[in-house]
Image 1 (cartoon, rainbow, N blue to C red):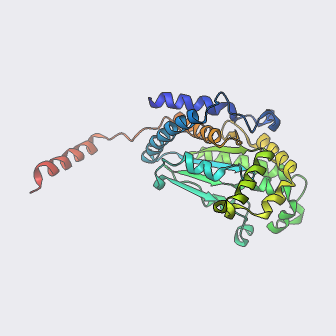
Image 2 (cartoon, helix red, strand yellow; image 1 turned 135 degrees about the horizontal axis):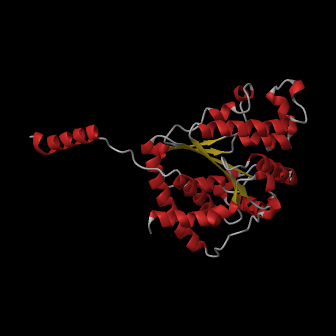
Image 3 (cartoon, helix red, strand yellow; image 1 turned 30 degrees about the vertical axis):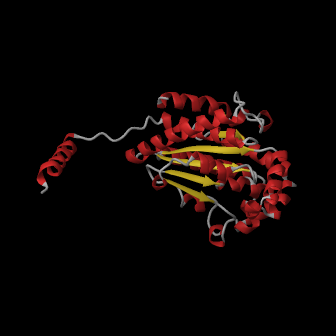
Length: 300
């Protein structure tokens, strides 16, 4: 299948879940168990394989052109499948051109800086793809749900008002505007898993000794704040989804469909950049011709 057809196929499955106007967004309008027009896992896996191959080709052009950088942000409740999505979708990408950063609880050093400082250090260089497994959006998610965490950030008391969340949304929008103006393409993915499916996956982790390491009692405790998190995610998307840096609200109850939608969103974005290999000028062509002559006739 031609690359253009693969890109079109990917676009068709991803765009229904793209939110570029946050003001109209309601989380209840998105079903975590949705699989679009697909009913066959095998069909989806075939399309994903073609998409991964195209993604590898596009990433090679991105790297060679050395103009754009790409930042992919993943946010989700625990057990939504972030690690698996990153592993499967980016499996064909050259590791030299891609870096994954997973953000845990902030360190003491990070808490002594502003809330964008620790992620800023890991932004991708031109020609590369940076992946944030969690990100600065934690500042309007977990910190908002557990507002006592604000005290650890040592922000002057007079600055901690009821306006702080709106201010953080504003900061993030300004930051992402700055990044896009500097050639960093941003795409954001919220893996939308249901509470029922999360419970199922937690139980699977408990029953599989190879997955026990993934489980923490803290994960179960966070389920008690489910409604608070859903509200926080909804307001996050409402305030930060725009054409410049859209969110994909990806159904996450079926991993095979989740991976297909994420791959489609990335391919769609890279395809629109109209990437190409750098053109070789006359002087370079002469140099290459001379090298060819040496290799063919100048060696003993």
